Length: 99
Image (tube, rainbow, N blue to C red; front, top):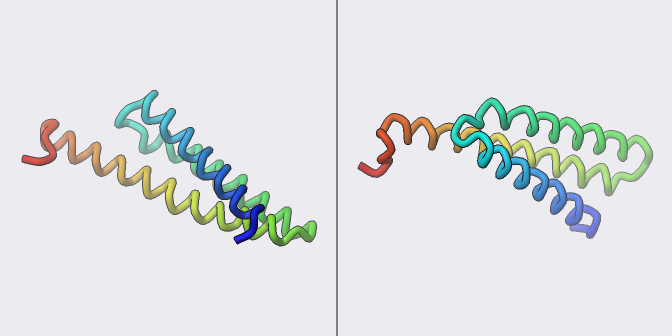
């Protein structure tokens, strides 16, 4: 993995972490729908950037953004659905998930 790929992945995963934490602090358990929009925008921006870099001949940058697109999609929506599942389990158990 090249330095460009590592740096692109690091930046994109930090951005994903930052807005996920901010949304969870601001909205609590009601973040399922709210957190989907930034994830969709993030994936879209990475996808457009990846295609752009392939078109202009910078394939290493294009590969880095395509990998970032896949990871943000996988981690972002996985986190989104996991938090929704934990929230619904919490609500159903009356606040005690381990009874």
